[in-house]
Length: 320
Ligand code: BDR
Ligand code: CA
Image 1: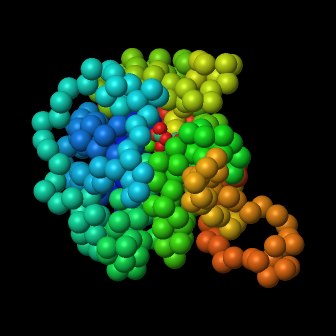
Image 2: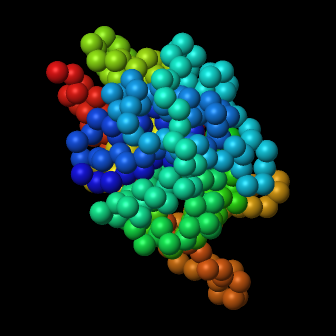
C-alpha cells in the first residue's frame, strides 16, 4: 500500500476523506495532522479523533497543528460544516487525545521513518505544510508527491476567484507550490463535480457498519452547499475525499503540468491560484517580464462515476 499522511481541517468532507483512506486496501494511513480551517484547531482535533474511532482506526496518530494562518486571522467555515465543523450530527467526544507531538513534529517523524516515500494529502489550509517545509526541509527527500485539495482554475468559493483552503492562508499555499516536490492540485473545478446520488447515500446510511453509516450521514449533510446548483440539491459531494481517490486511483484524473502562482496581493484577487493555460508565451514573457513559476500537475477533468464507484465500493466492502 501507498504510505499516506492526511493534513486536514475535519470538516464534513475531510471526514469522508479519512473514512476512505482508512478503508482502502491500497492506502496505508500512517498519521493525520490537524490545522485550523473549517473550525478551530481543537475542534478539528476532536472531530478527527472521533472519525478515526468510528472508522475502527483508533491507533492512527493525530497531531495538533497551527491554530491560525501564517498572517491572517483564522476564519472558519461553520456555515457550511455546522457549529461543530462536522455537520452537527451529535457525534460523541473521542476517548483519546492527540499525540504529544505537534503536527510538524509528527509529520517529520512519520515522513522520515517511512520505508517508502510518503504521499502527503493536505485537504485544508496549508499552514502546517508550509511550517513543516520551512522548519524541517529534509522531509522533502522522503515525500513522493503532495496531492492537495485547494485552488481553482476557474471560479472560487470563498471569493469569486479564491478557493477556501488557499484563501485562508495564501502565503502557506505559495510556500507549498515552490517546495520543489511533485504536486497535484485537486482544485475546486474537479472537487465540485464528484457527487453521490441520494439512493446511494441512503444505502450507506442503512449499513450495519458505524464507519459506513457515518459516511452516509455526512454525505446527507451536503457539504457542497457553497456554489451548489439547485439541481444538485439531492446529491452529496465527496469533496476532499476525491483527492484521496486520486491517490488510490490516479487514472481517474486528467492532469496537465502547468505554471501556477498564488495571488498574495491585498484586494479582490488575494488567494487566487493563477493557472497559466496559454499555449504559448505572451507579451509579458516576450518583453522580459516573465517570472519563474512553479509547475504543478493541475487536475482538469475527473471521471466522476469512477470515483463515486471507488468510494462506495471501498466503504461498503468493509462490511463483513
Ligand atoms: C475546501 O474548504 C473546506 O470547507 C472543505 O473541507 C474543502 O477542503 C473546499 O473549498
Ligand atoms: Ca477540508
